[in-house]
Image (cartoon, rainbow, N blue to C red):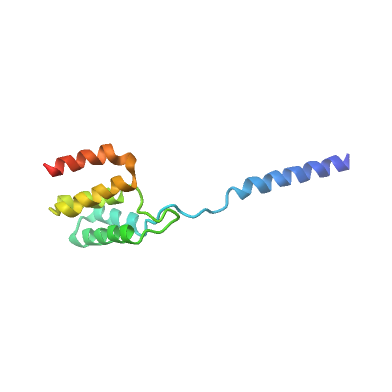
Length: 120
């Protein structure tokens, strides 16, 4: 009887260990740096300073990608490209939208429509 309890205890302990091993920390796929904070500040204040900080954050994320994928996160090139288009920087903006499609082909339908609107 005692031996059965001990075996049951060992089995439950092993199950718990294996189950908790899956909860270990994993490396992030992408690096967002301070994007959340900067985009929140921009949305909240919409000042030239907050806009400049957000634009610098876009450049940092795109030029210095970290994380296990070593690419900019999904949507960042498109978002930055759209901002540049709205500022009148057509060539730079379109190039970033096209880069978004290269990095994430599943975005081609949506981003392609935006590109067509600005290429007119």
